[in-house]
Length: 498
View 1 (cartoon, one colour):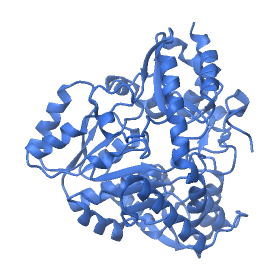
View 2 (cartoon, one colour; view 1 turned 90 degrees about the horizontal axis):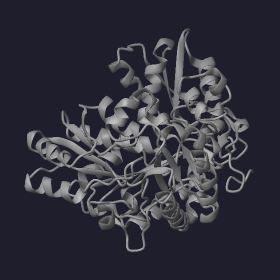
View 3 (cartoon, helix red, strand yellow; view 1 turned 180 degrees about the vertical axis):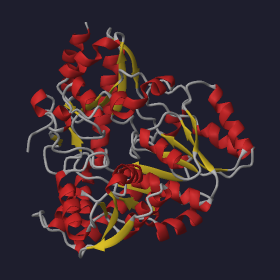
View 4 (tube, one colour; view 1 turned 45 degrees about the horizontal axis):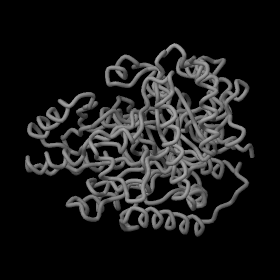
């Protein structure tokens, strides 16, 4: 396989290639700034080149083949389908469709793997795909291959069980929690969806609060499902008082935050938030996503009741398997109630093939995180001194001190940073010149860059900028390449800004 550390997917001819270049790559190469715009505008000249894509947004060939197979065998005239890992996922999709006035939605259990299928009129396809995207309960590429008979790799149920248990024990060992409090999901978004579903079921008719500018779909999940959400971008100190007013005014289902946030790498002072809840005598669960920092670097259980992580990212590193986790804090006053809900109503393990791959990928997780953390600091220091760079976002720039509070004794700062140029008009030329893999996702073993705001917020750029996220921002997920190689490649690209 192509060595992405020394031969990154970054040239115009690499457009549409999966990253990594295997049938299981969950990112897609967008080598030029114009390709990103073409992707967002659904330009056939760009999207027609795609051979893969992030599975919640793009249906990879193996999954498309499974959809086609099920449609041919079971669909009625005019119907389309989505196939899910289990029936319960399909039933949730059908309920979502019915809430959106698609009364004809129906479900079916399919094949020896008991996959779940949701059928719906073709005109409702976009609505169904919204559920697929925001709930994240997607069938995997390997599972789809197995269901269609296209996969050559065979995984036994016993192998899958051992791998799932090993992953839970690995996460429990790192976080200091218990394996039985670790729940695995087919994507990071599915983990977030499970937590949101749990909170809004156990605490009905209550809104949630999102602190700071988060990964786009985590906020949209809260806005589109349940009772809705308050969003505080924390662009100013006054947002703490706004939060206090919300806490005083109404009961809440939960407070969500990232440590640190994506892409601005900020961390809201969760100690202050916890103190607010204590002083106001309000019992509100705090949910923290530690994907960007990683549980190797920080211990968010010092404050969080529930922790979500996209295992797709640094835990895997390879970028060839989707997965997520929810870990309950055994010391939380909500623990028993939450554990009972998740045991009854959530996923407990990954499909066996994905579990085997993820377990193998994550064996050197701790060492990899330490390396990319050091590389990230080195690149941050270089960019902070570069005359063409206006601002660098990194968790080292932590004015509240909360990241330091949560940081483990031997912890670092994760792989992620973002930056903006003094002359934003030069951003396309700099991005185009970068000799790093270019596409969505983060936490990969190889450096991965993207014009994040364009990719995540193309239809709401003014809103993003009002929240402090510059439309020309470039996000860098630093990899395992030697630090001097990363800096030299960045130096060559930034020459385009001079």
